[in-house]
Image (cartoon, rainbow, N blue to C red; front, side, top):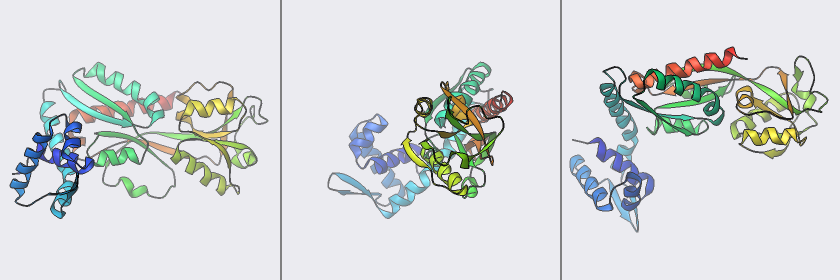
Length: 304
């Protein structure tokens, strides 16, 4: 019989390349890792690893088992968490991954409400941008992932295997310095009016969307600065070094000093969602987290 603890050890060896590195990742000794791998190979009746120099290489059987391990572990985790939470969420653990602007706006409100309602539920938070956050979810390294996708973008089917909980719709806005010719414009402006400006670009996915929108308006933006740090984007715009286009949620996550926001036409929007695996969606602690994130999204929309 294959044991979940042995699968976790196999995944660690596969990702790190050695017993000693896997032991450090799992918080155990190298001999303990070796013993558990021998036990797993005895269970399945075939070698799973081949030593090549100082590293370990997976056999074909090892590759197959690692490929199935994430789903197996996710299913077992779902069962463990559901059993632990039967008594009314007095126990539970949720690993949440979010992109930065979601971490500073939606997540604090949601987790504060969750803690007040279910103080026994523990939530950990890490940051990652999609698609990396979505891959962490599929690989079993988190339970809930906040992600986004732009309206009309290709690859809408990329989440078909996941449970998708819509949170809010986020519109792109332009940022210009306070003294800019468009700073006090009432109503929306076409992005083509910024064609000759210097640009400050945001995260890689937002950067790609910016280039796509600009090219659709007939020009290629001259990007002089690029940074994943939203306060840095705002600071560069405020210093008069260029203009930027950011999601409204990103602007709301910082204090935009020295800049003005300008509504753009045609409107470009992104859908903010919370994602989880179908098995994990049945876990009460995960369900409660999704519910609070949805309420936080509703409140965020209402304040605009």
